Length: 296
Picture (cartoon, rainbow, N blue to C red):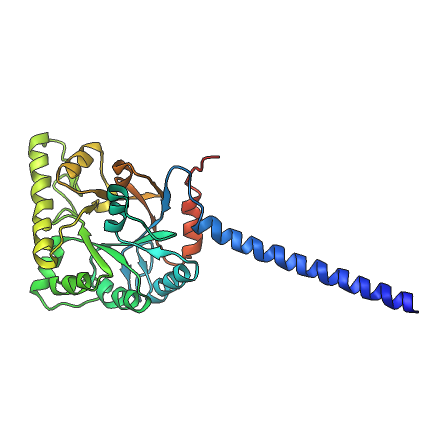
């Protein structure tokens, strides 16, 4: 009888060990999945995902519109998984001046400067103490600064709101062109038209971008160092002009995660991950990571 009791005790202990081992394996796998998404770095640089947002409101959901609850869920996920939001200036300083970045850096970029960014995004980044990069269209900010129109569906921020957000230290203001976020008279965004000479085109592009540079500098005290391409359309000629104008980085709409090293050229044509409605940020980060080729 004692032998049977002893065997039963041993069997019970074996079963408990097996259960514990299976649970441990499951936990390790879960931790590994998070690590793969957020912490693995290639040998020749650091990984910097840039999430692309447009509107955050309670209607019209789609590829460029998510709800405030979805955005808050993004912030919660990033915080719980030890991501650290940074600005473009921090990334530029890392490359040019060897300044340190926090572990697992991520950039939350907002295009166009819709009023919903001020009403629905700004309060949340203050609550969670996270940073965003807001690329504004100068003409739109000018127009809505002159009228009292706060329709969440289409209104843009005013210069007073831009100044308030910038001075919070949580919102970095960057350039999305003064008035080139449109398709008009054969010009698609900031691209050159078919019958336009290279000299005239460079002058045209420079005048538009410099106008917004001066406006943002006068309002915030800082001149943008990053240009976000309207519609994501660009080519090598445009990049050359952008560099001549003094911009240290450019944002595109190409999908993927960026590998940044000490070469300043890695700051141009940066890829982003578009945040669409009903798509979890965890899934999108994983898909973005899948575009990166790691050295073995």
